[in-house]
Image 1: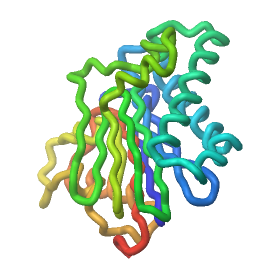
Image 2: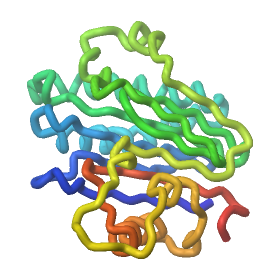
Image 3: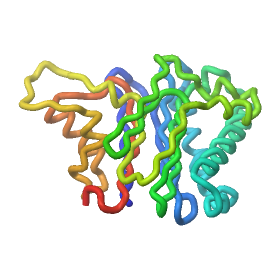
Length: 246
C-alpha cells in the first residue's frame, strides 16, 4: 500500500491554509484517513481543522480503537472513531470556551481494512471521494452542516441523521479531498501549451506513483505546465493498494 497526501493554500487566501489532513495506522491491519476544511467565514478556522486532525491521530493510536479493529466491521470502527471525536470536541469546546464560529470545519473521514480492501467513509459537510474511477461528491451548496453546530446533542441522536456515508469493497485506488479540488483556475495571462482536468490528474491518474511525493509533484505540474492554481485551499489523501501504479 502507498499513501500520498498534499495540502496547498488557495490563491485567494493570504494568511493560513484552512484545510488539514491526517493519515494514521490503527493497529496492524487498519488505517484512518481524514481531510478537514475550515470555513473561511469562521474565526481562526485553520485552528479547528488542525485540532480535529490531532484528535483523530490520538484516537487512532488509542488502545480501545485498536482493540475494536480486530473484531469489528469498518462501519462499526468508523462510528466508534467519530463517537470519540464528538466527545473530544465537546470537551475542547468547553475547555477553550469556543464559540460556534470557531468550530466550523467539514470532516471527510475514511477507515480502511487493508487485508479486506474495504473502506467506510463519512462526509460531514462538503467533500469528494474518488475510488477506482468513480467520483462521489458531497455538496451542501456552500452551507455545510458542520459538526460544531451539533455538539449540544447526544452523539447517537446526531449520528442517526448522518446520510453521507459510503462503504466500498474490493477497493484498489481511492482518494479523499476537500472541495478546493474543484477550484483550479488560471492565475496569469500567459499561454500554456496544454491544459487538463486537475481533479482527474490528482485523484485518478496513476503516473508518478513511484514517488512518495506524487501529489505534491502533480500540483506543481498543474501550476507550471497548465497555468492553474486552486482558488480555495486543498487537502488530499490518496491511497493505492498493491498492484496499482507500480
